[in-house]
Structure formats: structure tokens, C-alpha cells
Length: 143
Image 1 (cartoon, rainbow, N blue to C red):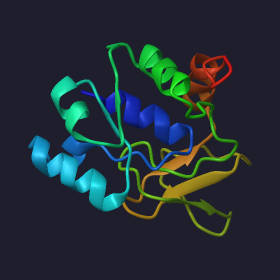
Image 2 (image 1 turned 30 degrees about the horizontal axis):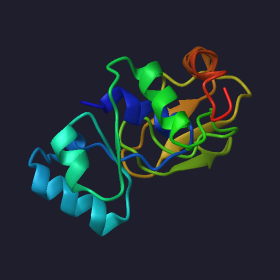
Image 3 (image 1 turned 180 degrees about the vertical axis):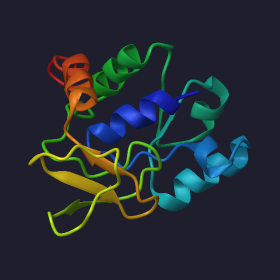
Image 4 (image 1 turned 180 degrees about the horizontal axis):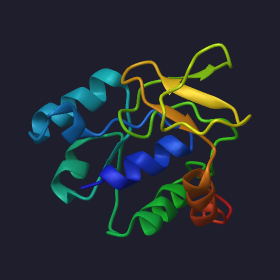
């Protein structure tokens, strides 16, 4: 239910796991995993939220409205200065210097680049980064 939200939270620097990416659909397993990993569970499922102590019930469907709910709950929502999490798999990113040859889809310019340690995808602050930053601007905890 919250896959887009997980991607946005990763742009904000959060370690945001997404149950379906982990192949988890069972509520009991999801609740147990959140507890095992010390995570706050974000969900639109009222019954699940009621059963999990550290949970945030989201009522909105639109991802920007969900981000507002997250911010209203006291979690800072702003784009990280430097990316730290892979938007695709949530793996940690490492900055890549000019000594490493990037794949052909990575722009050949002086912008900093990052590579996911888990899935090997590459990232840079391009038009997508700017677009997400623009959408998220003003949502923050005091926005």
C-alpha cells in the first residue's frame, strides 16, 4: 500500500523497508519483522496499526498527503542533502569517485555519483532528484 511512500522516504534519507519488496504479505509476519528490526510501521491497515505499538496509521492515498501525515506525526520530511539509500531496494549508497567507470546510462559530467552496495544501481542528482525535491519542499515537520 505504501511503496511510493517508501521511495520518497528513501530520498529523505530514511531506512525505509517495504514489505512487498521483502515478499511479506502476512500481517503477523510484518508486525514481527517491524518489532525485530525496531522499525516504525507505516500502514493504511487500521487493524494492523492497532496491533503494533510503534505504528503510524495513514489515512491518505496520495503519496504527498501521506508524507504530510508522516511530518505531522513528528518525522522530518525533507530531501537529504546527499543521497544515502537506494530508491529501488533501500540498500546503502556509496559515493563513487571518477576512477570507477559508470554504466552507459550514467551522465558523463562532473556531478557526484553514488552506487547502491546491494543492487549496484547508480544515482546522481539529476532532473528526477530536483523534481522530487520540489514536490517535497514545504511538507517538512513545520510545513
